[in-house]
Image (tube, rainbow, N blue to C red):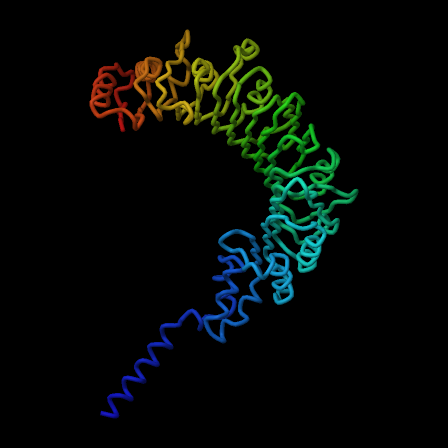
Length: 442
């Protein structure tokens, strides 16, 4: 009897030892696991066992967020929490320092946290501050602009970019400036000039950010995301000189003037505007070398397209997406005429216009575009509502696309089953210029 009890105890002890395999991992692997948690959550693992008591203090990533999920208890203010973490964390070199909080005190004490991160050769700095009008925007310490090890810098909301005369960020490859303020236009240009190897830039501008002119002249830039969401009568200018730029995402909701000097290496572009008008013509010309282009607009004004004929606007374009709102479908014919080598066409009605049943105008081209005769092989139509202009476009493409392989039509989910069946019968009756064309209706 005693032997059986001892054997059971031995089996249970072996089972407990083998079940806690994570604790048996080396520190470097445990640090990697904890790096996916916020610092507050990583600290909570200290109660698991003596093995875990101080493991979190050696994690090279600090993710400090004053959110409802990770917020400290009422007796411990967020400021005290961050100070406590920085004192206990023993990492000499930080891979990432993430700070997201609501500013409730004067921001001067926050600068000491930045000094701490920079002194530890931080590689990624992610700062997001949500304050109120009664508190000033945070100005970053000058030491940040000469950080030799910084690879990624993300700034959003309650930050004011006040850049000194000297900027040297030799390793910075990713820069995000989202809804922040700027002391002046010179602060922007000085920062860009000091980023010698910058490859990705995210720039979101808003009303009252103290700048009206943005010059992006970065010879190493490969990816650019620009969003202008300001309002008012003040005219803004965007000048881009990026000879190796591969990807451009642009959202323009104001009167923005374009001056695109050199984007000759562009491969992919995504352009979203409320009104497509004459001021966008320089932008469209700059996209002439792109292979993949996506346009989003709600309305368009009469534009001076005569400057393009007989010029072929999109020389290398193989895939084009058009997301159109209430007006502007007539541009489909023009864009097809400008795209001799187009292979894939995606048509969609903007989400904010679907299900309303509004008819739009569409006129077919006077002459069949070259792409329909020689290259267009795939067409996708999303949010199809069985409207007259939509049926006309589908009928025209099916009839004239000589090498079309697939027409994929995805109907609006609000259509009843009987309407979908009737729609499918209409589509099957349309003549096809390509014998190999398959019609897919979802």
